[in-house]
Amino acid sequence: MPIARNQILVTIDGVKELLEEGVAFQCRYELVGFTDDGKPRYQCIYLREGEPEAILVSTRVGKLGPEPRYFNIWPGLFKHHHEFGDGRDLRFGPDYSLTLEERS
Image (cartoon, rainbow, N blue to C red):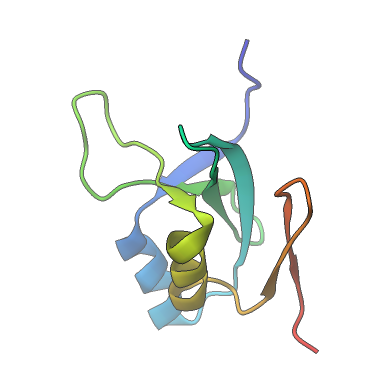
């Protein structure tokens, strides 16, 4: 049974708006599975003070509603984080876990 979470949805246009307005946020990337050829896939979660977690979803809405955007490490996740991330450095563990660290 899925775990209930207090989450909302955000599109890339919503993220662009946050950046344009200078709203403070952090990103978190969750490993959600692997492709057929064994590459890890991640989803992006945006975090803002006092707001529920926001899952990044596709701008287009399918027949069953909005779908989460998934990223392979290269080039998708790197490109997305560089353009729409929170400025922290990505760090990958040997198990494909991902953490973000402040730049030194």
